[in-house]
Image 1 (cartoon, rainbow, N blue to C red):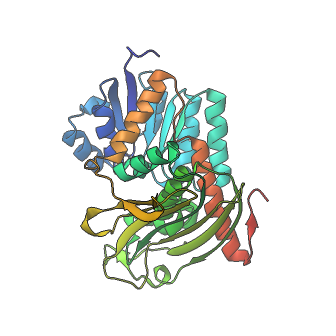
Image 2 (tube, rainbow, N blue to C red; image 1 turned 60 degrees about the vertical axis):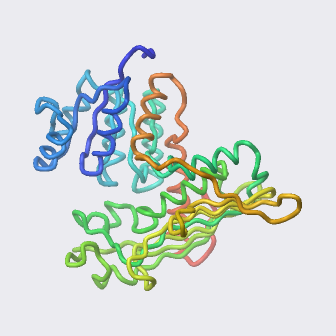
Image 3 (cartoon, helix red, strand yellow; image 1 turned 135 degrees about the vertical axis):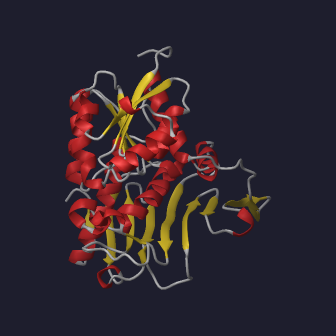
Length: 359
């Protein structure tokens, strides 16, 4: 495929996947050739909204994967479908952009990577929060060497009450892979790892809790209660990496705290500078960098552009990498590392001990 070619893309799962539709339609070197959803009502709404001809709307994803007119797909399906659909897509020679989490388990994630490598196709994880202006700015400062060695970090996404009930699979371990940690936590875990340079995890300690979900409390919408709840609604982890760096990590769907609280953060500690990214910061100062200037502690608040859709930027990156033949900055391997850490937190919680990654 050359730069003069247009990538032909499809989106499977157009509930959340509407963001991907927008991304493909706004890329000058891409053509959206198909959308697919098992729900005819959602398919019609999205198709009409984005002016997609009925001939390009499908309810069976197998028809999309078999098509010779599709080069790449986005998977925006429930978690348990990520691996089987991606593996089948690779068998049909498609590149894959997969919504987070990569899969419901490390084992399933490994099978996805093996299929991608065997097909010589790209597997990218859609970590859209990486493309916030604050994170892009921080990554630029880190790449410029301004932080020196980042030896510690803290990250979290904490909510007061927002246990999802969409289709109810979110609260089922077999279908979701986990609860708050794998739903919300995987985003901020990726941000911390991304800014730290994706160091290799060595050991993990953690604890997971389910205090509200089993009682049907703090659901969203409030009047709907999950039919099944066997996942976590809060979790904590502590990760040690090769080279000695550490990460403290937390995530919650529900907790007794400020009403309607919904904020996430990453805090970095480097040898030459530190930083705090916090979505609940006053005056819109969501990122601040700290360092010594003339031996005095100083705070640097950058002026940043207004954020645009991170999904759109992620989709554009996916398209550009395929057309240019360059590796993605968000490969499936990153998604696998996140799953390894989250699985280790669950295991540590169950066994009451530190877990060695890979043991």
